[in-house]
Image 1: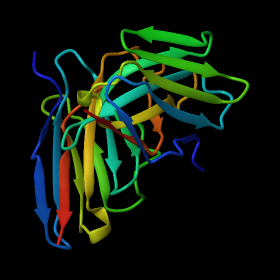
Image 2: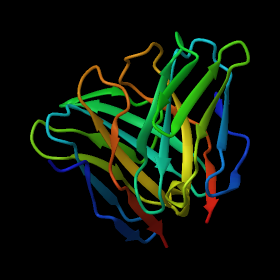
Image 3: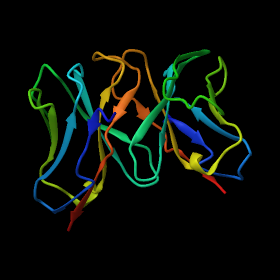
Image 4: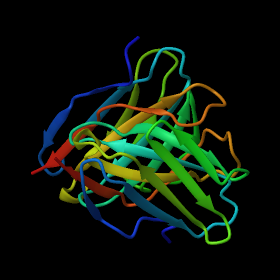
Length: 116
Length: 113
């Protein structure tokens, strides 16, 4: 049972344009979400997060939007840069409740390619 | 302030051998997690440990896999009698208590031949 889903395996955008990466979840008990970025041969690095009490969180070029009624979140990168080319994973705490440092449930990932 | 250190980076084992993967958490982090990434898949949780305690091993295969985080030294993920299907990237992460968004190591890529 895939509780966190990223249905687009890949995305290609032009440098300077907006990248939108999508993530859907099935468990309405999730109340915190995270995005990780992963380069080849490296471990994932934390990018941005959002609590379910918010519908938007912004950090520089990165903004995450949460639509609880649709059980959908998205990561916007504006403007996109070639260095943003990586695999992006969304994740939710699987132990229940925000602040829980237990397991994370990851989506399958979306490979973003930003063309110069 | 070193990050999460995993070694070896690459490990090749023949079928039936044992694989031992090591993880040293960031300084001050007392929680360690192991994840596995199979080819073309996302990261799957395996086990969550604190010093000398296994907190959640719900993602560990029932046989051949074990993990420990001793009072002294790194966390160890052990895979006995490896099979081809164990070939994957194994990532360790650590966090301090009560924090979100833990830090991952660079992973160990296990290849079973």
